[in-house]
Every structure is written in C-alpha cells, then in structure tokens.
Image 1 (spheres, helix red, strand yellow):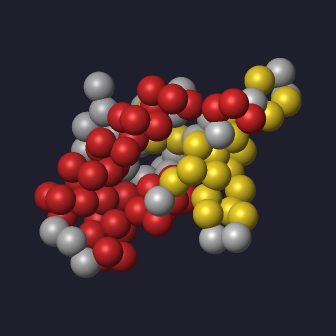
Image 2 (tube, rainbow, N blue to C red):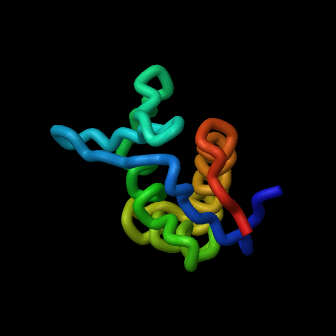
Length: 96
C-alpha cells in the first residue's frame, strides 16, 4: 500500500522519453520496447515521474508538486498517491 512515507523508484524496464514536449513511458520486454503499452503523461504526471528517484518520499514529491503547480499540500499528496497507484499498476513501479 502506497502512503505518504513510501519511497518510489523507477524500474529500469521502463524508458521515458520527451518528444515534442510530450513525456512518454515505454515499458521494455526482453530489452525490446513494448509499443502496444506506450503511456503518455500530462504535465503533472511527467513532473511526478521525473521527481521519482528512489530517494524522495511521496510526501516530498508532493511538496515539489504543490510548489510547482501552486496547489495545497493535501491536494498534491492525493494527486501524487493517485498517480503512483496508477503507474504502479501499469508499469510495476517499485515502492519501498
């Protein structure tokens, strides 16, 4: 269960690329891009994805989101947890 103290990290089996301002996540299968499972992130999702470094907690990432997008810490935490839950389901995000 992901909570505010969880520390997410990206799996090496997912490649992120920004193309023409769009952040795309491409899962790899046997070192080959799974183009049928390509995910496009909105600006907030891309910001959260780029903040996930295996060192910051969900709460710390949410604080960055709150500052960047001028929203309350509570709203940023809800949105960050929701995003990580969705991404975890789709790309097996590691969470400690």
